[in-house]
Each structure stands twice: as C-alpha cells, then as structure tokens.
Amino acid sequence: MPNSHPQVHILGAGLAGLTLSQSLKKHSIPFIIYNKTPSPPHHNYGITLHSSTTSLLSLLLDTPLQDLRQKICIDSFRAHCGKLEGILRSSLGSEIKWSHKAKEIIMVGVGKTVVWKDSHLPPLKIKDLVVDTTGVHSPLHLKITAQPPKVLPFVVFRGTRNISKEV
Ligand SMILES: Cc1cc2nc3c(=O)[nH]c(=O)nc-3n(C[C@H](O)[C@H](O)[C@H](O)COP(=O)(O)OP(=O)(O)OC[C@H]3O[C@@H](n4cnc5c(N)ncnc54)[C@H](O)[C@@H]3O)c2cc1C
Image 1 (cartoon, rainbow, N blue to C red):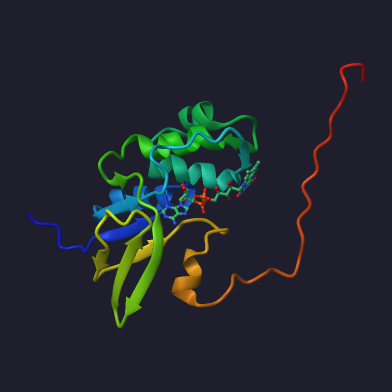
Image 2: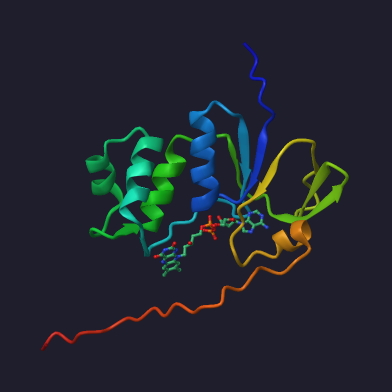
C-alpha cells in the first residue's frame, strides 16, 4: 500500500535531525535528510543527557537500556556524542544525502525552495514540510523566521578543572 504521508525534508544530520528521523521512521513517515559535509563527522566529546532522555532513546531505537548505555555512555551522566550520532545513523542509509549544504530557503506562499551552495545541485522545491536542524549557529533559520535567535536572560558557565597527578 502506498505511503500516504508527505515526505519530510530535514536539513542537518546532527543529533536533532537524526533523532527526528528515527521518530519519523518509527511512525513510517517518509523523510530525507540533507547534510553539508561529504561524510559523517565523528564528534569526540561528551554531552550530558538526562536519564529520561536515555530511556526515551532506548524506546526509540528498540534497544534495551542497558545495551544502549554500554554503547554510548561515558559515565552516569554523559554520552559520547560521536557514538550516539553513529547509533542514530546506523539504520539510515540512502535517506541521508551528504554534500548538500543549504544556502538559502526561498518561501513563496506555502511553497519552499531550498537552494544549495553547490550550484550543480538543482534547487529542491518542497510542497510539504521542511525542518531546519542545522544547529543554533546556522544562519539558515534567519531565512525562515526573519528574526535573530532569542537570547535567554541567563548565562551558563562551564568549568573544567585540571588535577595534577601529584594531587
Ligand atoms: C565540548 C562540547 C560539549 C557539549 N556538551 C553538551 C551537553 O552537555 N549537552 C547538550 O545538550 N549539548 C552539548 N553540546 C552541544 C551539542 O553538541 C549540541 O547540543 C548538539 O550537537 C545540537 O545538535 P543539533 O542537531 O541541533 O546541531 P548540530 O549538532 O550542530 O548539527 C547540525 C548539523 O547540520 C549540518 N549543517 C549545518 N549547516 C548546514 C547547512 N547549511 N546545510 C546542510 N547541513 C548543515 C551540520 O553539518 C551538522 O551535521 C556540547 C558541544 C561541545 C562542542
């Protein structure tokens, strides 16, 4: 039976785009992801995950929590970002289009056209949903919202302490 859901176009294959893709996959909603880099990055840093996030990821990926924690967790709070992205990507194949850097999104009425930086790629005309997950520093969302990102009225400090071997 043909899938009646319109295809969702996702710009950006980072944690947000990949997690969204896995959710759409679980609900049999067709999607396609475009990422600017020619191949997957391998981020080698830890990100703090709330325990409820790990539980939700376990459900989303149909992976027992214990197995998931063994694969991605550095300690009880942090996950290895590159490994997590790798797991989220592992069941995706041709749904990810690499070397597709969106330069701008032109919106006319309900229609959207994504123009790529590589002028050899034909512009993508979208009647359905396009989701921008190109990250907080990406200038793309300005094309969509026409507003700069909202700055929250608080500051988060991140501290690192080096402890010498003698201590
Ligand atoms: C050292 C370090 C520690 C961190 N710790 C934490 C933490 O503890 N908790 C936390 O929540 N976050 C942490 N972060 C931030 C974390 O990396 C981000 O929260 C997370 O990566 C955001 O995911 P994202 O998918 O929104 O964006 P990104 O990971 O930035 O993904 C965006 C994707 O879009 C692609 N892209 C960008 N522009 C375009 C374009 N024009 N066209 C097509 N593709 C494009 C990029 O190649 C990338 O793959 C940390 C970051 C660093 C560097």
